[in-house]
Length: 127
Image (tube, rainbow, N blue to C red):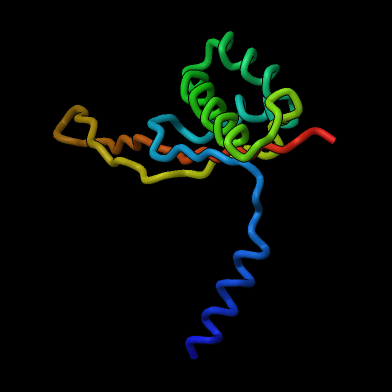
């Protein structure tokens, strides 16, 4: 039994994606708002994407600048050249939703959903 587990572990390790990545979790911004910004930087060079995010007025831009810098640092740690990097893949997944109550007239209450998200960014070398 133990040998089968070792074989599975080796197969997983062999098939792992080794591109540099960065992940941020539990960001207090709705995933639908993040998608618009991520679509603008997907496929662009790292320097162009960083300039777009630093000059953006979107609220999520600060988080994405920090995430992109982290991914760049991970790539440089793996020995990749910063000038050759592009933003290969980016996606956002919904995180846990905080449920709150908004008090209304006549003793009623409305539900407030405070959404969070997890953002993943993968870099790759330009070909």
